[in-house]
Length: 275
Image 1 (cartoon, rainbow, N blue to C red):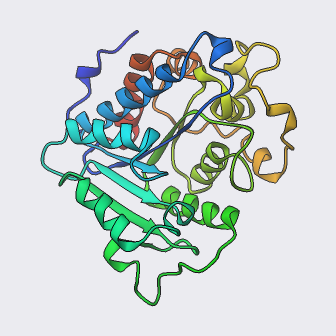
Image 2: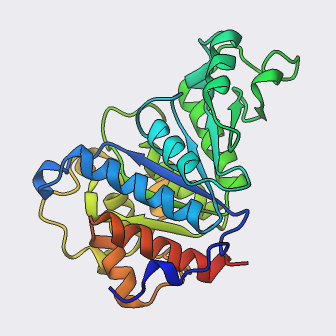
């Protein structure tokens, strides 16, 4: 690898919000990987974002799974500003009481913030969840998830996607795929770490086929069941600026080494968004 991560200025991403999209990939075993590899990658990526002065943004369940990994890693390396913003979709907080939500906020450090997203895509702190304008009535889950993902794409400066399921998903289309489409639609840089297969590899194969000639036949698993509807067609030829040269872009698309993914993402982001 070409660049020592320490060569990126510590505050290169000061104040920049970088969304992380990740979920389990059905291709891990075939690639000789385990869920732990995915978790380590998310942890190292979060750490790199925080050390570069950025804010790690995650939209997901409260205090479990990848949410917990991103939060704990961000808070561990925090300095003097908020480093973790948790946007909680309506589907994840609608059935929780205000006391449960406040208890979650109470467990967070001073460098983390929680934003609840209501059924129509409006964000509010937990203290605002009972306000008249905050919609907590019954909403179709796919609609609630799309509005939440749309909001996050708007407030963030960029997104990194890793892994992601292509089946048994809740929403109109697989979550990581929809988040990628919405990020591109908002004109934000998208970094696709395809080395874990799954939804990220699906996005990358549609976006930049030339970088995915390494994909084994039949991967990513579950892609054959997806219909290439309008959302997917918008991925073609949308590589956009990443701040990476061709060799770096190819490595980022295929590597499953946490250090590669974290270093290259921060390198590209610092070149595009650096203060």
